[in-house]
Length: 98
Image (tube, rainbow, N blue to C red; front, side):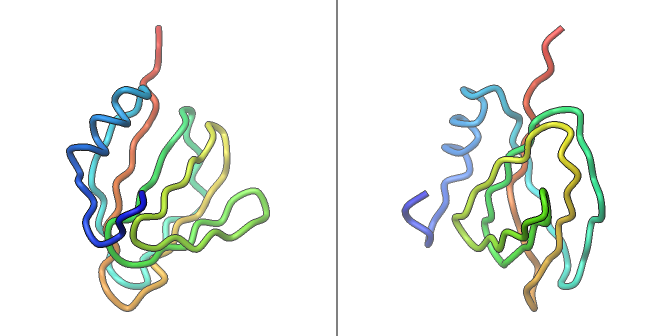
């Protein structure tokens, strides 16, 4: 995303769906931490507002408005709201095929 002031959620949803991902909104209060999650499918995250830290593969990524990342299936990760206000982000999982 190049324009960090306005993210068009419907455009993101359409793009992600074309790539085989769902797209939903998540909101966390300041200080909220989700520890050691592992999903059996790939995940995408795009920050709408606030600041989050994602710890995975021995690295810490700081994501702010407009930043997007990919978390491969099977990757243990922790997500933390690192700001002093609610963090809102879009997340999506790759559709599983039968």
